[in-house]
Length: 88
Image 1 (cartoon, rainbow, N blue to C red):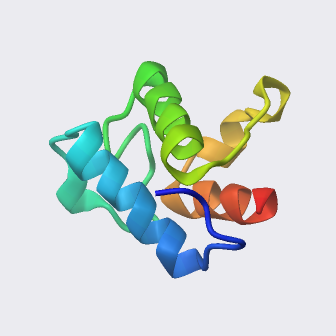
Image 2: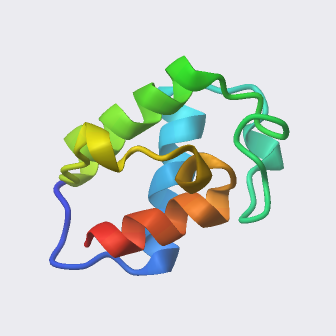
């Protein structure tokens, strides 16, 4: 799936959910919600977060430069969605 002109927040939410559940196969996908913390609630380590970023780039067409990767943007699902919305 290539990135549309501009994905809605709901489409981004579902895309991230699908990547976590079906591509990264995280066992904690049932805890997925906007307030879920990537590290503490979804038990994602830094490698898994990098894999998520790679899927966002390859599957959705995002181009996320390394210098844009700031930990605060990858703290919760909400902060990730906010970051992605800023990239579209």
